[in-house]
Length: 321
Image 1 (cartoon, rainbow, N blue to C red):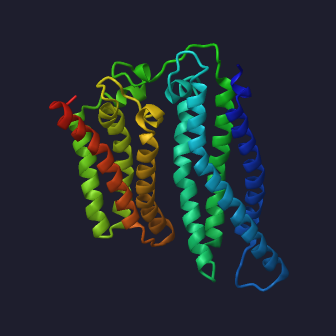
Image 2 (spheres, one colour):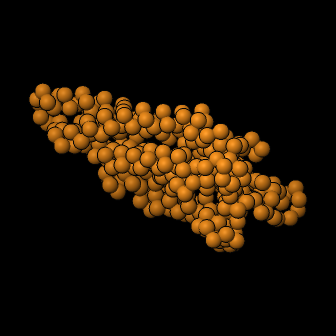
Image 3 (cartoon, rainbow, N blue to C red):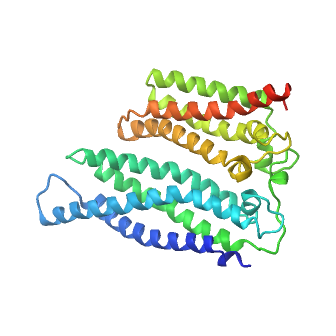
């Protein structure tokens, strides 16, 4: 079966095509607003731009929400394709089936945060009758439109580059500590270093939250995200699988593990997103958002969830992996 004929891949291509059309229209409007919009002017052209700004805002908001949600469908698609690609047992094998795979995954994760920042700015702008962030949000959209294009192009090249007849490496190889790949070396960081750093970053994030140090909290949340992914792969994941040699950030998304990965990643992304957003919007737009409690709450749920597995394993078996 050709990868391109898989129903899930066809849906992804249709979605990207439609969003590309709508976002391109929005980008043209955004450019005109950045160049000519002036709320203090009372002219027909300004009135038309104001109406177009509403249209563009709704187009962008809808498309960005859809792109954020669609990453779940993308991961589901990779899992489905693992059934027809030789050597692939989960999404890792399908991702490694093309040289574009891991770059595509990285830009999709990055875009979740970039898209989310725009949605927050737009929400704040629409709440104020003076629309103080209109030009800023459309100028920012022109930047993230480039990342949107990059994601669409990478996804196109990725699926066309996959050869369904070629045997691929899956998680047992890609995340093996003896491999020379970058992702393989992630699991080579000693747990006695990465795990304490993970918990220390969480504690520092709590301190910066209560002290309302927005910029520092955002920086800490970024590194907390990085070490959360490292420790989930190298340490906590092994207790979810109850197998010390199984290092994979994707298998936890499968039914065999009660789809726990979807909950873990949701907690982690929401928690770190609001932490980083507080910092970014304060630094660049002097926009203060009271989202520190949300960030703390979801980060706490993530830490509690991943900590549960090694503790449960020790209480049942009396030993650590």
